[in-house]
Amino acid sequence: MAQAVSTAAEAGDSDPAHLRALPPYAPRGGAPPGGRGTTSGRVLVLNASYEPINVCTVRRAAVLVLKDRAEILERGEWALHAETMTLPRPAVIRLKAYVRVPRDAHRRKITRRAVFARDAWKCQYCGHERGNLTVDHVIPRSKGGGSGWDNIVTCCAPCNRRKGDRLPRQANMVPRRPPSAPSSTIFIHVAAPVIPQAWEPYLAAA
Ligand SMILES: [Zn+2]
Image (cartoon, rainbow, N blue to C red; front, top):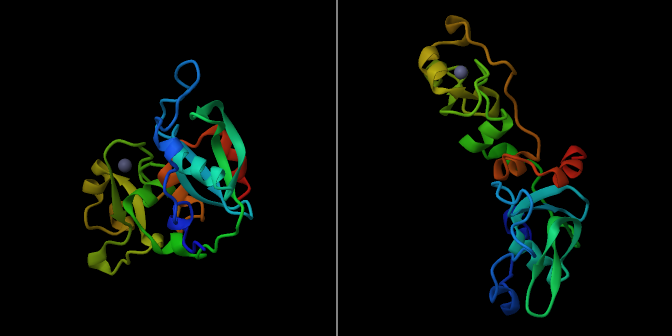
């Protein structure tokens, strides 16, 4: 069986021919409502225990459902059509078999996007949102600062230049929130900066 999060939703799956023959999704009567967002083609994947573990494409979710490896918990307003069947467009699916997820995998994996997602894409010094974001070592590496979650924050480019190689108290720049390892749903936020409404109840419970 599948062991890792990243492969849970894809292990051994190739698209069935009757799905491949069609576009990934064919909304009935025009484009789906609100369907042009960056996450419109994304499906939240829950473990059998209802824990959010992954985000996948609509097509992959459909394959899992057709292979009876997952059930649809939340559906979109439109459906997927293939030659011989119609499937509700999945928004949230739940795997039928429990998949073991390494408890602290998300804590070890520090990427820029994960840091930005943890900090809600806001500079932790001035609060500026989006724009030209960088990551900053709160205690500069040259002064012995580490590269763990507790010493890295999202920082806009101007603040990064202003702080330079100084300690927070030297620069009079202290992160608004003390940085720490993110929650286990961080990779969901990395994959989907804008969380669809249908996902929210499942993420709030996690
Ligand atoms: Zn800033």
